[in-house]
Image 1 (cartoon, rainbow, N blue to C red):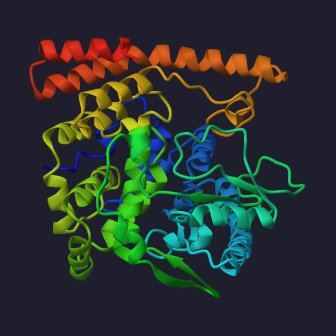
Image 2 (image 1 turned 90 degrees about the horizontal axis):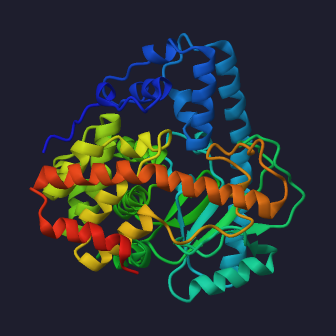
Amino acid sequence: MNSAYCINGNMTPNIPKEIKALVAALQLRGSQSEQLQGLSDSEWKSLLSFCEWASLTFLLLQVQSNGFPRWVMERLERNAADNTRRFERAKATYLAVAKALESSDIQYVVMKGFTKYPDYVSDPRLRMQSDIDLYCPGDAIHQAYSALSAIGYYPGQTVDYSHADHLPTMFREGDWTWRGNVFDPDMPLSVELHFCLWNEKTTHFSVPGLDGFWERRVMRSLEEFTFPAFCEVDALGYYALHTLRNLVRGVPITRDVYELALFLHHHAEDTSFWATWREHHEGTLRSMQSIAFCIAKAWFGCDTSPEAQGEIDHLSPAIQQWFHSFVYSPLEAMFHPNKDHVWLHLSLLNSSKEKQTILRKVLWPARFPPLRTPAADFDKFGQARKGWPAQAHVKYLFYFVSRSVHHMRVLPSTLWHGLRWWASQRQPGKQFWIFLAVSFFLT
């Protein structure tokens, strides 16, 4: 399979010019920043807002900046200075959390955040971190919850956590208020206690071979402190699965995909690493990771090792066809909503019942967030909604109507895209139409 689906020229028109320019500048082979240099001030403002929302600000700071407007560089440098100070807060938060857990003899692994240095990010100060993610297996998670509660952390109640891989996010009391700066050094970090590495209940399919991740955990060092983490091959496995999970859920993945691409590019000739990867990760686990590898290579032009490329080439025809048809759909969805991810998800399921369940949930969700969900107060870019009423119940009604309109608007194109994807593999027959029909009416 040729996974170089390539790249900027084949992007859908629904992806804005400035985003195409950013992707061109982030290519790991053949990077081009000329398109960024030609942006207007309004396009730069749009790009900077997008980068803040998608956590790409510091990737933009690291590309060739010749010809960037002065005000753009000043803003990026100000963001970097704030995030440098914020990293100190992240370290202090982690050390306080670690002390509380270790004093109760609770074992855990740190995931994401500063653990991505140095393989996935060049400097931990050039990666936005809003929380501390910890994995605690078995009963340890409840002990960790109690230990954090004892030092002032409490669970959030305004978000629906039914599809999360962690307990409700824990916050600490304080007098900080939002001032519109996502890099605010004074913004406290929350803590998320993860109870699984892959949530079969929400994805409706399993990924075998994850038990060894805990057994192979290691101690790592970063500057003046140490922390427990997954070993190098298992860290890659977890990050690839995390990207896959967000991909099939329709959650933005741009930063995660770029970080994976960076790892794959820099380790393409590391034969020892990939030999260990094959030894520790069985076939299905490697195959699931390769879906994330494939999109990383398609978006950012990274080199891949023979082992990684071999797994990509052996993906099923349905998944390969999904990439050929929808490789940029996850990026497009950030600007022009689509639900093309559902067809990838269905290709990973074996049971017709599970496929019907996922299709119904995605096409017309039966659950809506609780009354005081932050989504009713902020748009997808984190900006306060303008023109909406202040009263909570009325605001939620506005939100409910807007989401209903969204699902109705996206439904026809989703079904049409699914039909084209299905037809590209086979001639749709009676069984397909029966499946599509019952997906709407079965409960």
